[in-house]
Every structure is written in structure tokens, then in C-alpha cells.
Image (tube, rainbow, N blue to C red; front, top):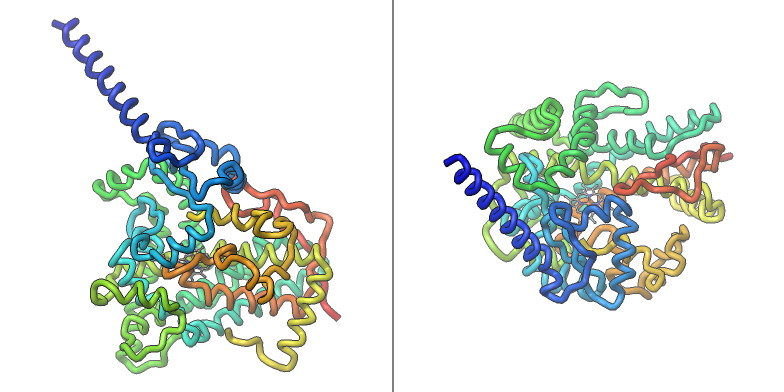
Amino acid sequence: MEAAFTSILIWVATGLFLWYIISALWHYSLFYRLGIPGPRPFPVLGTFGYMMRQGFRDFQISNYERYRGNKVYGIFDGAQPMLVLRDLDMIKDVCVKHFSSFVNRRSFALQPPADHMLNMLKDDHWKNVRSVVSPTFSSGRVRRMYPHVAFSTTNLVKRLKESAESGEMVELKDTISRFSMDVIAGAGFGVQINSHENTENNLANAIKDMMNHSGVIAFVTFLCPWLVSVFNFLGINLYATKSRKIFVSFVDAALENRKEEKAGGLPKRNDFLQLMLEAQDDGSDFMNDNLSKEEEKALSTGTTRKPLTHLDYQGQALIFVLGAYDTLSSVISFTLFLLSLNPECLRRVQEEIDEKIRGKAIPSMEEASYAIHHDPELWHDPDIFDPERFTPENKANRHPVAHMSFGHGPRNCVGMRLAQLEVKVALAGILRHLTPVPCEKTVYPVKLEKLQLRALDGLWVKMEARK
Ligand code: HEM
């Protein structure tokens, strides 16, 4: 009896194993069956193992080169098949011309409120939320966030001037990240902090803690998306629980507060939460100049606009933080670092800044994208720092989607105006008074981390006061 039971068990186990092997072979042969080339995938990890070994940039560049004769190639993020577009006309068609068939972006299994961030939303839910978030970043409203950017820039310049006086070396990514956090707290939530002097702010600490946790969680749920449904079912939240609660209660309380202030006729605040509430109430006469023709068309088709839910607001508060923290601190710190090594460019930028702002206030104001931005057939000497690439003449002479830092079409970066304002104000504020120069700790060429756009040895410079 026992022997018969054991033999049934062995048969069942063998059957299950064979079933798994056959279904895995079928699943992972998808691109092969479709005649689409790509690196060979393995069960569970898909092609993710290569990415871990090579780093995301080298993995993308090597595939981009290897499949040069093809418009697309296929990879597997764990079990998820992913078509990577490498042809510029096709990218334009997908992002702009045929947008209505490609509304959704790559999404990950996430828990609330992260699953309500704009970049994760699909179809009509995306349209509904985007139609509120887009006018939140109209030029008039971004201008209202400007005082927060200016306040944070003043604190940053003060910190850098002190370093210039003492002759201390400065790691730019760390210093600019503090500035980024100050802008997020101010322009996002109306909380003025100075992270260069005060590292003990509850909101800032909660945000930093949530971001530190997200890497590991993102990796695990990326490989096993079903885990998220299990944890949701069990009522367990995977994210830094204490910090998430602090953040979410802060957002809820701030929104309530703003509603009460409005009812009491108090002056309007100028932060993202306030502006989002106002955008929700916009009538049809509101002129949203953050809206391209394509975006207007994409948002106008479909269901009627519904009020955002609590989770929608929390999700947008979270993407405001995630969208604005690392991206902006990387852009500003790398730009300053590269300028310190290119004195001629630096001199011209400083001259331009002096000319533009003399006597005036600072003006208010998965495509294979990494590989495309480094393709020598599209960009002459792609690894050389050359801001001249972005003059109007040079822009006019290249394919309209060869540069896609903010994406293209109706689903491009909704925060682009704020990002550009922040970069311009910070760089102009710093370079007007200070000159970054290389120092003993400067390491160039920069060695980058495998999975993130971070310099392994830091971005070290010294600041010199301008005469
Ligand atoms: C230099 C800074 C930034 C860069 C390079 C950048 C880049 C991008 C890119 C490439 C996309 C995807 C576009 C696509 O899928 O076609 C995106 C989407 C997005 N970005 Fe940014 N971004 C930056 C700053 C910001 C800021 C400051 C915010 C908000 C305050 C923000 C909020 C968003 C949101 C919400 C989306 C999703 C849009 C949607 O799905 O409708 N970003 N960004």
C-alpha cells in the first residue's frame, strides 16, 4: 500500500515537473516562434541574469548593437516577455501616431498607494488621473512652485559657498540630493526644510526610508509578481510600513487642511497638493499649456472625468517624490561635474548666465533609450560631453525622437516643465557665484553602478568663488 502511494507520488511529481518544463519551454520560446531575435532566456530569471551580470547599460547597448539589422528585439523580465524597440520611426509610431493602441506602459506588481502612481495606471484610469495631473504642471502653476525652488537654491548656494571658503571637497550627488529633497518637501507638500543643516525632518526621513526599501522589494516582486497578490490578500504591506504610514497620513492631513483653508477663504498655497486640488476643479475654460495636441486627443476620447480618489491622490504624491528625486539630482550633479572637467563649456555657460540674469531675477520658469542616446550613427562621439548637440540647428538636423530623455507623445513625462525649471534655476544659481573645479578625489572617466545611474566613486569637485 505504502509502495503504491510512493509510486503515485513519484508519478505526480514527475508529471508536474514535465508539465513545468514543457510550459516553460513554450513560454520562453515566444519570441523565437514570432521570428523576433533576442538573447536566450532562462526559466525564472528570463534574461534578467545577463542584465545583473553586465549592468543595464551594457546589456542594452550590446543587444542594440547585436540586433542592428532589426527594428525590435525581445527580452524576458523574469517571466514577462518584453519587446524592445530600437527603430526610431517605430518608436514614434508607437508613442505618438498609434498611441491609442499602446496607452499602457510596462507596469510592476505593486501595493497601494504605489499601484496608483500615474506611471503605473492603465487605460481609462490613466486618462482620468493624467487629465488632472497634466494641468497641475501648466506653466502658470509651475511658476507658482518657483518660490520653493528658489528657496532651496538659496540654501544650496549658501552651502556650496561655505565649502568654497573652507576649501573643502564636495561630493555633488549627495549635496544635490539634499537640494532635491528640499524642493520635493517645499514644491510638493509646502514644507520648507534645509537638509544641508537639518537632517532630522520627519517627512524627509520617511521619504528617504521608503526609497531605500523600494530597491529590494522591487527586485523580489519583479521576479515573482504573484507574491504581491498573496501579500495583498493577507493584508501585509511590503513597503517600509512605519515610513509609509507617516507619508500617507501626512498627505491625507495636508489635503484635508487645504480643503478647510479653501472653505475658510484663506490664501492659496503654492505646492503640488494644492495645485492638484485646483486642477481637479478646473472648468472647461482652463488653458492647459502643458498639453500637447496629441495628449489632448488621447485624453478627450473615452469616459467622462471622475473625481480622484484618496488612493489616487496618495499615488500622485508618491510619484511626485519618486519622479523628482533621483532624476533631478543626477542631472544637476553630473552636469556640474562634467562642466568642472570642460572649462571652455563652463566659461561659456557662465557668460550666458551673467548676460541673461544681469540685474534681473532668475526667470520663472521601454524604448532602447540609453543605447539610442549612445548610438554613434545618431550622435557624433556619444561619450563626449557636448552641450552643442542641443542647439536649435543641431536639433533640427536629427530624427525627432533620437533624444527621448522625457519620452514622447501623450504619455511623456508630465513633470518635464518643473524638472527643467529646477535644473535651470539650480545651475544658474550655482554657476553665477561659483566655479566647480576638479580636486584630488575626482575620478574620471566615471565608473557607473551596474543597475543605477550612479558614480561608483562619487562626483567630487571643489567649488571656487567667482571674482
Ligand atoms: C530630469 C528629470 C526627469 C526625467 C529625465 C524624467 C523622465 C521621464 C520619462 C523618460 C518618463 C516616461 C515617458 C514615457 O513613458 O514615454 C517619465 C514619466 C513620468 N515622469 Fe518624469 N522625468 C523627470 C522628472 C520628473 C518630475 C520632476 C516629475 C514630477 C514632479 C516627474 C513625473 C513623471 C510622471 C508622473 C511620469 C508618468 C507619466 C504617465 O505615465 O502619464 N518626472 N519621466
